[in-house]
Length: 291
Length: 225
View (cartoon, one colour):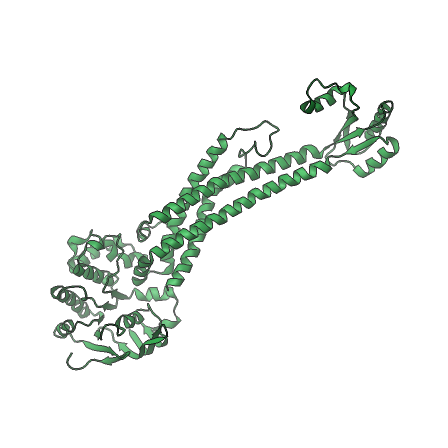
């Protein structure tokens, strides 16, 4: 049906309005699809990063009266050194704690005057440790130690990133559906405006497949052209978005990377395919109605 | 070739044609006459499968139209050339492409029959108008272009619906000459017309059978025709 046939293509007169509508729809939808795709891919990257970076680290917080902090810290470190699944455990120095707090309170924070808890940073093996068992042991040997395996606040972040990624794909699906609806409307308008052409073609013995393919080819090619320009414009716009730092999140890291380019390159042919299916559906209905 | 058996056709709750029985033999020349609105065009449409009979059977080339798909009817229609009073062209294509349309629509390469196309345009006297667009043609030229389009697939049957309705006497005689020539070549001709002068002129040149639609029924015309 998509086979190029110059003479067959000429039987449908050029129709300015529907041609422009299809081109513009495909352009706009592909442009939006590039952004939705970039958003989805960025959300996926963030979810992966948060998942990977935080999954293998935990923290122990020791909140005890000043005189007991050192003892409790030492007890907790002893427990950690004998816990399977832990690669390294070290108590943060005052400087390290100051560095952690400086983004919020500034570099000249008088940390010595604050009743800060002692923090112990834990690095896990890939398999991880038994958090429930560790908590029981800490409760027995270092009761002031509280284990934070980051799951409590990491899970909502990962969930949010996952939902954002899902939202991106849902947007792409909606964009494709809207594009199909617009192309169907344009094809319906073109077919209705060309009822006389269809009557002549039927008079001379043209099959419905021949008549439909003349319209389908035209609309699929228009959608392909519009989508190619829309995708290109979307890519240029993405390049112009200022990029963030290494720790950038979803909104500042909308670049397309690696395998993501395959999805971007697929946008124009998929748009053509959507237009092909939509026009074929519209042509089938109109030709049935005109029979 | 074209066979109607007790055919009736209804539209909008009213019966337009009833109890029509006819067998159009190969190589025959039929005229179909009757007052305006009597159903001549409807009858012709039944004869080329553009309409489905409400009851009875229409057989084209020994195949009952009722059991055929639209694509099957389209293929059968390639054996039947149709000339309409209003001609029906694709106005954005030149005469040559309109005449070659049945070839294009059936998947044949019109370039392979360019010589035939030129010959055909010369036969209908349109050589000089090959590149003109249909709206630029006179009534007579349009009818001749429609006839050329109707015969380009070398069909067995030519159906013409009021072919001389919009043209002058001289041009209608020219068109009749072409139809008579086709009949002498063995083509079956069925012409719907209320132009009695055309029928008389044809009877002087070739053996014809004249049918009349009267009171929704098909009758043989009287001896006056």
